[in-house]
Image (cartoon, rainbow, N blue to C red; front, side, top):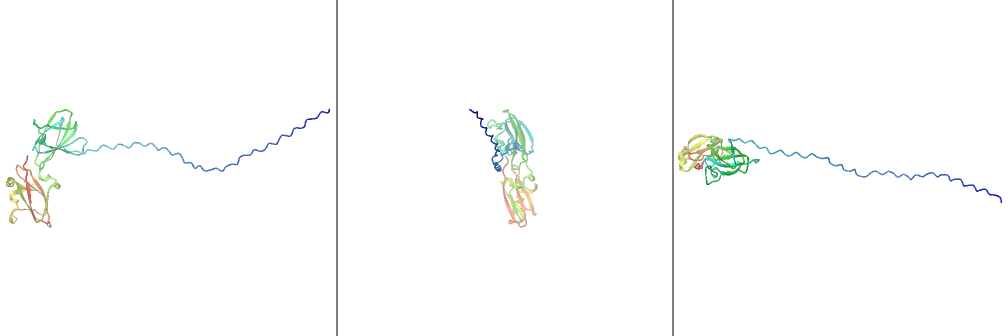
Length: 250
């Protein structure tokens, strides 16, 4: 038999070109940016401590926690200002905590520290003392002698006020004070109480030119009484009699 030649192999297929997937149009980035962490803030500075105003004092007292008052007159009022406080508070009269008494207890301070004591009474000059208190139970005697206040130093805004066109007179009680008392204008004596008690004929009235005046009535053994007089030509009252009742001292 005749040998057959093998059939020729088919030629290899030509390589097909590679197709790229169609490109997609780019879309805008709509995502929100990440929020930034807030910067650390420095702590706010602490407010400065309240400023204590300077207080004029008549003296200083070093003491324990207990005070006994030797004050003349003994009906003088006493007030206390504690550390870090801005106001005084009344603690009573000096005779409520008398020195040398076995019946009345001394005044007890709240604790060690710096305090202020104020002594005041109508017609008297005010006294203020700085008190430096330790922690002991020791009792300190506090001697204070109040002095009469000059009429010219009384605050005019605190006085009773009378408005007249011409003059004033005074009707003073008790009679003992009327007999021995004096009338002062801006601290200067003008005459006795009976000289200005409002008699007839204009002879016993305190006549003053237009202006503003501090009128005082004082008598031995009594607290002085002050009032303000405004003399205005167009005032509704031509003259006015002022009732004054003096209070015994002490």
